[in-house]
Image (cartoon, rainbow, N blue to C red; front, side, top):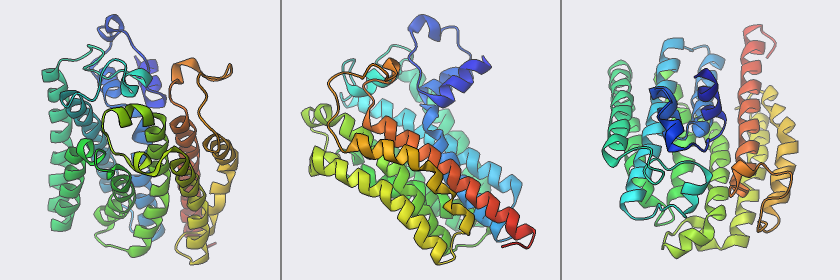
Length: 332
């Protein structure tokens, strides 16, 4: 059981209907919500929490509630996205979404009613946490939570009008990072906003990779993502620019003393950055290379962008934590 929880948090595992029947409720929820991508939400919330600690205003209970609420909201978003796309006729057995991981409805793992129940309960739990935090911190939390709800319900439609990528920048950056900081401290600080914006470039590069991977499928279905508007070659260049800008942004914020200097630890993600840069500099192969995990295909660009962003995000958090420790001991 625990092994499956860990597996679902690391990758999006392929499962058969007969296997599904043996899973506990949490395993089913983790697989259905594509929990492997929750790491991006965790990092965003933790950056906000560490900024609060850096400014001497950390509150463990509020940090944990905020992080849990954001992860539940992310899970609800993924569930509703699968439901809406299925109802709109976008997700089919041969579509990209159903190939890299089980789309619960397409794979026959859940009925529409069951998936809606999963989504509604998940969203209700997130809303309950949001209501409590609004009571604690005031109406701005409600505004932030309402914006997140609009993003959840609107994502399936936003990617049809090339707003998916801008939405990710706003949600995983200022909304989550600066919003988490506000919930924990009761204050809004623009330097946290800008730090969140720098980190959000990473999740946006992941979405670029995903939409480049499914470029042909999306174009055939009339979906208008930003890569569709830009074209494959230009979209790959944009994704490379986003990844490079993550490092330039951290360097600039360190120079401006918005980020503590240990945040420069992100340069240790250079190996993953070089690998992603190389992949985005060339066409996707027709078949997976011999050394490529077959269970990860047809993910290609998004896989390399995700691995890079995960490494960068953990180093960003580690650097901030080191900055907090040094400041606590009077060394920064």
